[in-house]
Image (tube, rainbow, N blue to C red; front, top):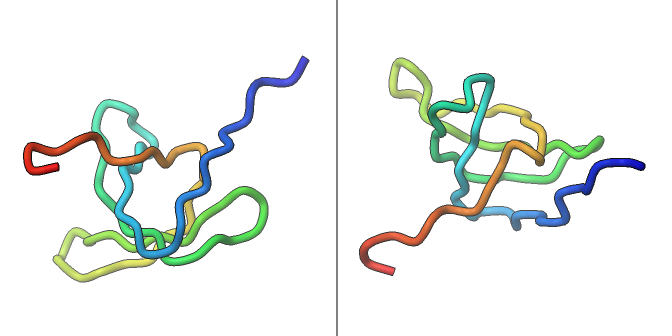
Length: 70
């Protein structure tokens, strides 16, 4: 039996939480586009403060948690 797949597909332009290699911390990224093979193109702020584009697995993305001002 196969594991349940993540049916949530974030639309382009939305800010989501990305849990990368270390699941201890997540970073906020903006979704730019959907790529092939269950991956998404996202934009994050790099180490030198410059925006960088990454291709990440959709399973590692999750909706933002409710905020104080939501």
